[in-house]
Image (cartoon, rainbow, N blue to C red; front, side, top):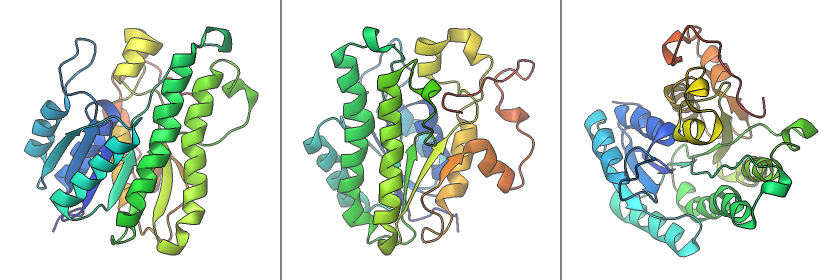
Length: 274
């Protein structure tokens, strides 16, 4: 029997990048996968849609895949996503809050619509999606919430260059801090996961550093492998952690990270907040 057989994982923003990599990793171990994302039509700047991702995941795994178009900025769409997931698979065992918006502008250059977008997705969307899933997670065996957000660090150097973005990502991490204790009585795990290095995603390519930074990044599979190990741990004893992907794999006895490097000849760049 595969590790995640008969488990259902709901992943926000699972069309590409880290979200899709986690979906593929869990699917290969038998999980049913729900991809909740906005991208239903092809976009020249972004790879794939919920439907192309679903085809790829279905080919990789033993479970079923359900693509749902939805925008987690809107509460009615969140409830529609959760309701359709439960109607299709009978419950929810794992919630991965991966959907996120990024803008690294300084305060004077941060438009209000960009501020609102980051907080609507990163903080509000993550909070409301978690809230909507809790009743179903209470019914699950070994339930987990995993946010893709950084360890909390109040050093001002993480706030000064991109205050609005930092506030929004730390908001996701504060949700973990609170839910871990609030949900401990129900044995629902709440943890955060963040990469040690930059990851080769559309955000890195389009917004941060183009090919220069991509060449100094790792593939999303390193985060997916770390998530794979976290999500199988006993929920009642693995909660409230701010995991770093490399540290998780070290603890599993993995020491060769060369396969994750986009270009092994280039020095890796640390990710933000580390």
